[in-house]
Image (cartoon, rainbow, N blue to C red; front, side, top):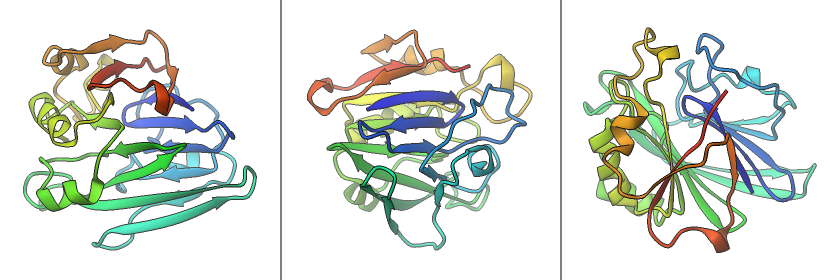
Length: 225
């Protein structure tokens, strides 16, 4: 599989059979380069415009989002490739005040080619024991690290320790391009300086394979346009 970082909290995952999933696409007020991609499925953690701009994705994708306050589960058959993907959404909050400040957030987890992916969206708190039990053992984690609207770098480390993933892609952090958008307050370096096993991939995309996942947690930095 290929995992490509599109900036902010958005990733594009493409399976070996070319089924494609885009996670948390952002609206065009976020000044990153959003490529003209088509996708089979778009997954949105919540309906803030920096995470739910499915209109930017071509190919008439199926949009997966939580529609109730309870856990959600969607089975999505992709006729083009013959694959069927299942997405499970665990209800969380966008803040540490039970959603009273910023509302709900959904942690989506799913399997692709035997790899268990988990995208935390705009998680605003540490995970509870019931939430951890519902998510289970994670292989690949997409974690926000920028604070202000999400967990901060220290909390991100704690959530990583809770989930014990094998591969971590940091997201949703402060950059010069979005410093006037009041979305983050900490940079990528504020997070990686707290980590012990970090690799700068120096590229926008990397191949992920179950047999080649690291045996202990590794943080991988992907570039974006």
